[in-house]
Image 1 (cartoon, rainbow, N blue to C red):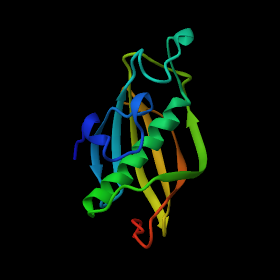
Image 2 (tube, one colour; image 1 turned 180 degrees about the vertical axis):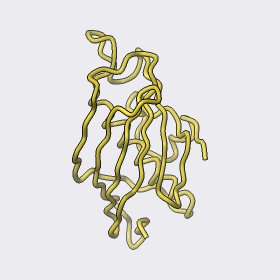
Image 3 (cartoon, rainbow, N blue to C red; image 1 turned 45 degrees about the vertical axis):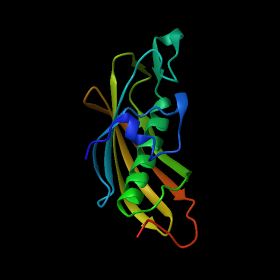
Image 4 (spheres, rainbow, N blue to C red; image 1 turned 120 degrees about the horizontal axis):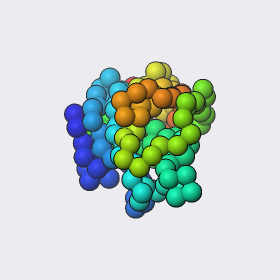
Length: 152
């Protein structure tokens, strides 16, 4: 399943310059896996002219938006509205680079490891131009209205 940038807007809450994920290159909401691609340019929100690129910490936001898209896809596939999510914890987040240069592509591959009610643990890997360069784990909680828990 491929989803271009314009369609992603219906799946995640970010707007304007804060909406940074380029597209979903592959997703399987039933098995809770997703891959995103984001091309870095000089108008990217976190672009820093002093280093001619984007600091590695911006990858955390790309991961978070990719995970939000996965949750939104799952909701859409089940006829539900996407929920707002909250990051509860981040662990083992690591990168073997400092700066992503303009023109490079960041790919995130994420999957849900476990879920209990509205709380999910996910792992994510970061690739720059196809080479694995980092990753980590995060725990998120969806603000679920009523008894519409999606993590079943």
